[in-house]
Amino acid sequence: MDRRPEGSISENVRLVLERIRHATRQSGRPDGSVRLIAATKSVGLDQIREGITAGLAILGENRLQEALPKIEGLRGVPVQWHFIGHLQRRKARSVVGVFDLIHSVDSFELAQEIDKRAQEAGLRQAVLLEVNLEGESTKSGFRPDELEGLLPRLGALSHVEVKGLMAIPPPVSDPEQARPSFRRLRELAQRLSRQRIGTVSLEELSMGMSSDYAVAVEEGATMVRVGTAIFGARHVSSNDYQ
Ligand SMILES: *Cc1c(COP(=O)(O)O)cnc(C)c1O
Image 1 (cartoon, rainbow, N blue to C red):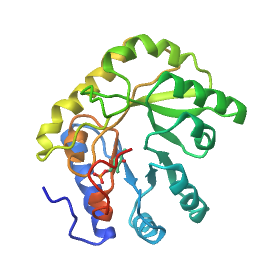
Image 2: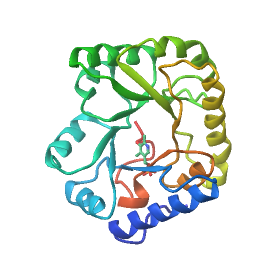
Image 3: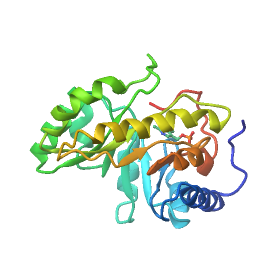
Image 4: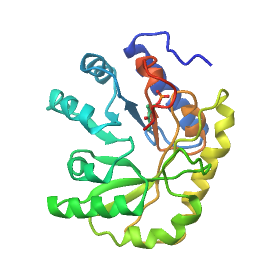
């Protein structure tokens, strides 16, 4: 499927927001229940500014080195920054406190490191737990079956606030093919919530990208991460979701 959008960035932002609103209603939830995270890797500041003018409020970056100059360049502009790429432990210190939410906590050791750095910085860092739904060996993330045992330990980290789950299901040509994965992530969050660990919330579900975000919203996403459908195709090869 060709995901290259036809319109200008402003038109694309409006279209994506409209589709999100429609799918939110389809899922029986009130308007505003789903937030759009614009995935801005390889996108320049001018394009990002155009997107913000058209209504983008949250920007998702994959790499610290790429994000920092953009954050600097947009200082004073009322946007939130989310970290959505793979995070190495040694970079945790630089990410903590800079991003409002880290979507991609994929190991207990990384959570511990974030906890330590957040404590040093005197803040609590909001995070999502990345789940490797299909057990793909090339992808990072918690296995669904290990989360139950780990949740109490994650909840005990006093400077990390677990807000929900995130997943990057394999790319599909038909968005309907992604529906079972989205449903599984939602059901996993529901199941884990029954543990009722006071400090852990699993209300946020970050799932859905350009090719399948509407289906993700229908299945309960509270955040979708969309790049190509807003900014056009990136000039890089297929698997650049790290
Ligand atoms: C790039 C990226 C996206 C957006 O992907 P598109 O297919 O361009 O919408 C979403 N999530 C992550 C983690 C990404 O790296």
